[in-house]
Image (cartoon, rainbow, N blue to C red; front, side):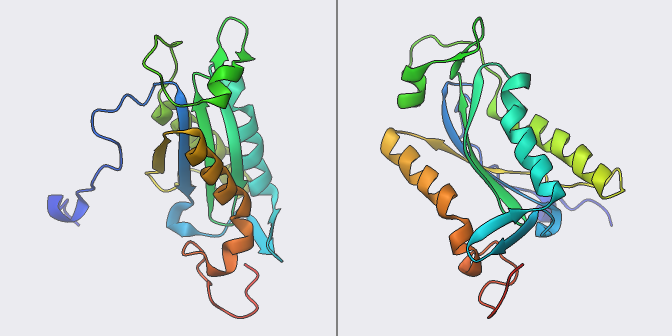
Length: 191
């Protein structure tokens, strides 16, 4: 099928003109390709990770080894997507120590900041590392594991960060009615 610019044009979800390397907290959602439920299942409002889900969790936790100035925050693996908070500029690259002031108030202040990767670079690495590892476990290669794009939201203050963390923490309990759940509303659904 030839490329159709009208059909294939995608609106960017990025905040126009915003510097996505600024220190701060960013809420992200990444969906599995085709929203396939590959990462585990929700049982009685709790997420049970399978081997793929455990790989995804481990890579998230190990992101600071790749990017010394970031800190992964709240995170949940769902059957077909993940939600997480990434704090950019939260560590001093010289010591790799968490800056408690950045953690308590993750909103950019306009002060000079430690050079940090962009949010896109962090998420790109996460998707690449998990995609390769998970496709290997599935015995396949060259197939997308994640959807091409991801959703992001710049967290603007501590109250918003608290709301995002609560949303992430409570996500498995809401799975039965979640729009991301392909079986939402089905009685007895445990996928």
